[in-house]
Image (cartoon, rainbow, N blue to C red; front, side, top):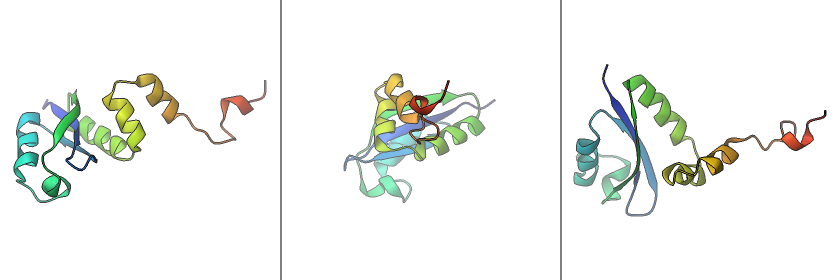
Amino acid sequence: MNKAWVYILQCSDGSYYTGKTQNLEKRIAEHNAGTYPGYTEKRKPVELKFSQNFQTYVEAIAAERQIKGWSRVKKEALINGDFDLLKALAECKNESHSKNNQQT
């Protein structure tokens, strides 16, 4: 089993970049060196704000895809370890699903 990481970087412009890798230290160095063209190339330096290890690369891919779809506020809740806020942000606010609208 290969271990893999999902990570969130904060770029020099304040934006966030989410990625996955099997070698976290090397990948962050590559972002800062501009090794690969892409989002972080013109937003250096980048700083690691969050990382999570997974047992398989497939799990890391799934987590990366999920996090990439999140709002900035939700990413910051994850970065800050504010799991209560993260849970609240994940709850459906749709009127038909609202906890306050459920009949007993």
